[in-house]
Length: 424
Ligand code: AMP
Ligand code: GLY
Image 1 (tube, rainbow, N blue to C red):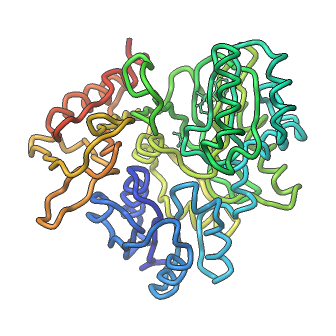
Image 2 (image 1 turned 90 degrees about the vertical axis):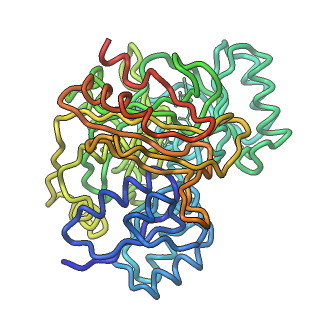
């Protein structure tokens, strides 16, 4: 196994981190990214193909004789990219469309959890507006209203009072703010506790957890401001040790993998479990059918094992033969965002990185591209993730924050408190 060609689908910092880790594999000769970004272009050849253009991706993968396709974002998974590649005989890392429903349908994942008794929030799913409304009338607040389908991270509303809950329901089912993603809703109890993301590699039989990570969703420090795609992450959370990882593996991840097989839709790829640690134990908030962003940027720098070996074992369904090793060193990643994000912002500002940037710091680009003059400029809300590992969380955190001033673009902002609770 040598001289492999790998194609990464997506254009975020997650995909830059995937390409970066894939580039470290002894087995890989060439990397492509579709469409990629300014970061992947340093390691890979960017192909200007949209992630939603499935026929174009399949054609290029065939022409280029790609040995492994790695799918980053959820939309192409939900649209059946993996199914199409498999039909063409191209090895691909990621779940089939039917299995990706764990993420693309909250009603599906809720019903699966109900059937197989997986620890989750109490609640109900509805396809009928009136039934949903009368159920909601009878519930106490706070309460959580979720659009069934993919809604770019905006389909979950935590309502503190009845009016907001009913407004959320109206917005999803009546105004159809999220289109057909709002054909059905999930209404569930609001859980309290610390949140953690536990991702696992799985070939449909064996599941091997990665190191856990935490994500920061709100735009400002102390979890103020609007929700974003994620403003930073770190790994590992001190409050989520090996005993908790084992418990989640046994009570959630393995039962879900077994359930998906039992239902005739075996799950392959990365299963991302979003959890909340309540007083009564861990509860599932959501499943994602892919690597998390920005969690991946804090997880992959800790991976010792060759990522491509793991992915090929998943594809061949012999993950049980692989041992996955991790560095003890914690990792912290801070997202630098465009001025105005998550609201309106402008693109095209030059990004400069001083040569004072320390060697141990890795920059994963997201909304960044090379302009016609070869200059790297901003091209999205979340522009890049700056990561560092260290002997301790404090060291990793200090390194990131010491280096952030060396990276500049007009209007840039970032959270100052990523991983702060781990070092206070
Ligand atoms: P989801 O897309 O389902 O993960 O929801 C996005 C975010 O909403 C999660 O990361 C949690 O912060 C929050 N959330 C979702 N469901 C609940 C719940 N039942 N109780 C409290 N918070 C929730
Ligand atoms: N970090 C959350 C996600 O990737 O969906």
